[in-house]
Length: 497
Image (cartoon, rainbow, N blue to C red; front, side, top):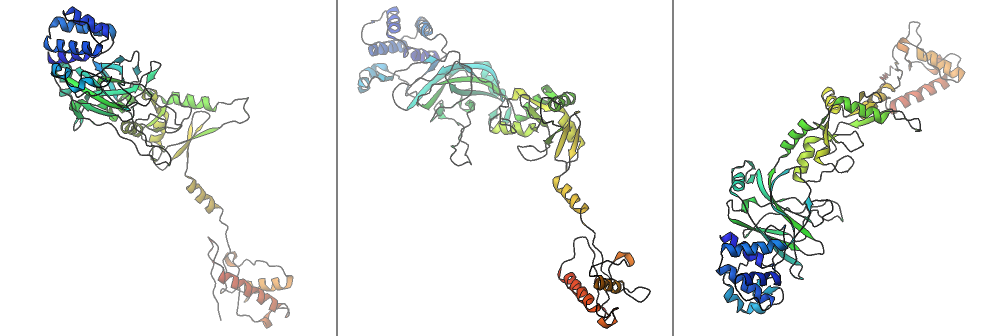
């Protein structure tokens, strides 16, 4: 009865003059006077004579004006519940401005007709406790307080009380508060008003804070998700009261309360594996469609490269996932994507930044096979026109092989091994060089160039050409000593005196 009394008093506060006069006349009370007198008289009537007939008349009058309202009332001071209205009528508060009537805030309510909230992947709505109802400002102040009251049935309370815990202090069955723009066109996403605060049964509850931004000049973003009010509720048939403090800055907002079941990222991943897997054959057909030759195009695409590294975490993909509406073949890791949206819901494709709702996610069957067949060192593959694929080796490895294959072979200088005829190959080579003026290479054992430093210029054949040949040989040795040996060459120099 106490809950019905509070509800009836809240309804009376929103009556028009005609409604107040009808109610007072039906109960044999005077219906003359100003509106504030009629409100005070009707409230005292409800408080002192709370009969079933009176409550029925109040409810009928209220529903005739607000047929879709469900116990939602906007208030400036929701925590004030008058007890004795006879004393309030003669108190100084009765002379306050137009915002108050006999010390009681003027209350009004407007149900948000046809406002539809978007469905959330991590929340399954079980029952609607309060349909979307608009927040109404009661004065010109920037900060407003609005209040709603609702009750849980015994079955609903038992559902919450007996549900499992997702983690300590967090039930799988919850009562959540959702706020969105008041707009009957389209489906509305959750949107918090400025300066929001939520009080449940005289205790403030947690509202998600702002995410800091690492980009200069970009303001922090607040994740607008349902507010879990379960820990502060009375899990019985008693009335629960929720007060929303919000900033009035020109936009209209609506509030709703739901009984929901909350899923974890692991549960959503299980749903994804069972309900949305694209076969490898269908994936090959998609690749062939993309690479099919177009005679009107000047450029023919013969292959498409796809990375096996997840763009979210820069690690090898475990479960390849794509969005059906995206044009690219690049996948991302399904588990990491769901875990990220569980903590910070954005539902955006990490490849092309388009919307990626859970309903459009699919697991790529062909990419799953490729990940199983390839070694972990393979980070990229290429799809070909016939739907097949080939691995792309690491660029560093390919560059190393290319460098090794292009390394030239350099001769080995051996200056201590004479030939069988007593003359060094270097002697002959040097003499020939001195005579002809052009360098030549004599092939000794192993094709090396041998320089003999034991010969003097007088021993050179031809006399005058020998000094020039030794000078040239010394220059060659100095160069060989000072310059580092070329890469891959094995150069040996020994001086014999």
